Length: 379
Image 1 (cartoon, one colour):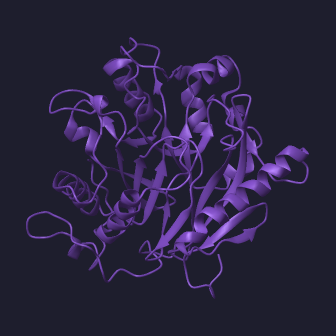
Image 2 (cartoon, helix red, strand yellow):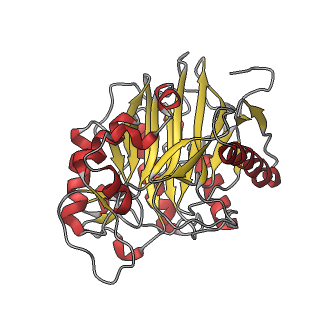
Image 3 (cartoon, rainbow, N blue to C red):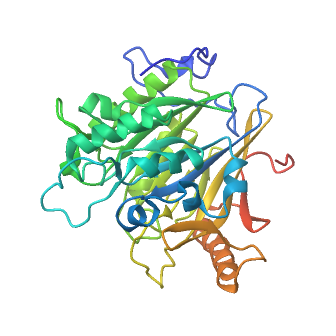
């Protein structure tokens, strides 16, 4: 991993690395999280961005920016977007045998679409990056690199796949590690390509060692803010398992500032632990998946981490609707009644699913706001 020029944060980061290169919990870290400067920034987080299959067919030869229909102002207001890229971006490769679903997008439109959406980081640690084999995986990494989009979570070997990365967002060095507990058969080997597959359970020695090694490198790179992007858990489940909650909290104890979960295809609740947001599942952002009316999986959210004066003040979430291989805002009075209903449903869903964690959820425009800082200080 290429190191940034930013100096390692004094005190907290320096004390995080033990004598054997493992990472100790940073018990003295401030709450809320700080980024070591007085910068103001907004960093977006969304779940699955699946640009393959009928999404690919729909948008080939069209204006790629329109896949984010009507979200231009909201995406433009962000300093960068973090997503899970749930497909290969390539025109090559052969289908991997014995799979049910295969996701691949044409780079001619998919890369400009990601650029138009302001994607700063794309997680590749998921169960579809190897659908068209190692050639398509390598192409995906190459296309993202050429576009200046940081990525992690897959590579030509295990070391590369589990290696974190850093990305500059509004002058903040954001360190990201990307892991998945999905599709063990896609796991990278010692010299074979694949994903950063890892059982996401803090009780397992191999898991602790892999995460500590990645965090060590993130701290060496001088990260101001640390994100763990996790593709985990079963589909269509609306509450995280106890092991997921334990792993997320363990990550924060090890120095992670944002847990960015995805994979279930539905929204889950948000927990605030030591002033850090644990987004257990951000749902999907664009896809062509089956519609499940009882789960409203086509009603989702664009999450927005608000940083003011160097403090991580709040997490906001604006409702979105996925329709016709496109994502657009929900809940605005100018939109059809069904979209107003979607906005209200997303707000109540996040409030209801976050309540068991003791999370404060406030109304903010068409969306919601979860305070992370002192309630007397507003973003």
